[in-house]
Image 1 (tube, one colour):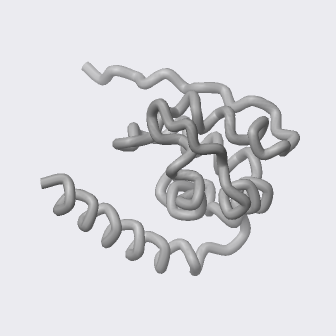
Image 2 (spheres, one colour):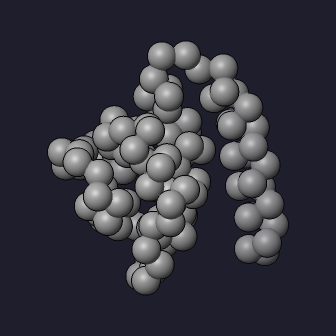
Length: 110
């Protein structure tokens, strides 16, 4: 079942990637999904309990996209297989001088 879910995620990411390419202005488009697509090279480094340091592609994407894209990602909906606290450590691990993202607490609708 996990392979089927992974295939669906890949299809969604490809479709979103095509949609994001048309986004002008901010490279990540200031949306959760476009930030997610742009920061795919960082996925192995932000998996829960991952000992894998960010690779050059991840650090380059982080530098190019900037703090707003990372903050969009860490404050967006939960992502299966992504540890938000590890994602927030990426700037330090990549030697990128970003201020910290403020975590937005989820609001409970009644």
